[in-house]
Amino acid sequence: MSGRPIKMNELITVRFTALDPSLDRVALLTRQDRYVCAVTRDVLGNSVPCTVLRPSGAVVTQECVEKLIKKDMLDPLSGDKLSDRDLIPLQRGGTGFAASGVDLRAKEARPVMK
Image: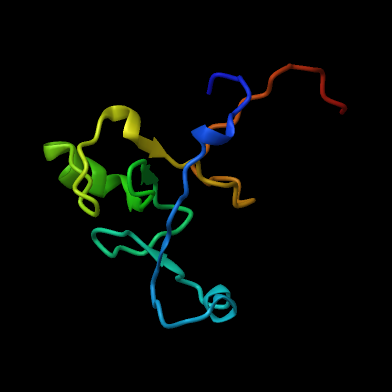
């Protein structure tokens, strides 16, 4: 993260692949498993690291990137040539669970009340 403001032309459209394309938006929100990897059809969740492919905007799992996409460096959906800059990792949200796998550190150490 550079800390500089983002310009409108730097934004890309992120396309999540629905588990069941026949469901409308409301029915999709009520399901536990909503979205899948665009290539492998693995279910996406908060515990699954994901990556966005810049040319197509498709969301795929990090495992798919490492095992399938990095070999050829081609976008499997659009066929465009990829560079390392075209692979954008998605940051996972917090779950509220203490051991969610995110390493948090305090910015400032202060005395604690006893």
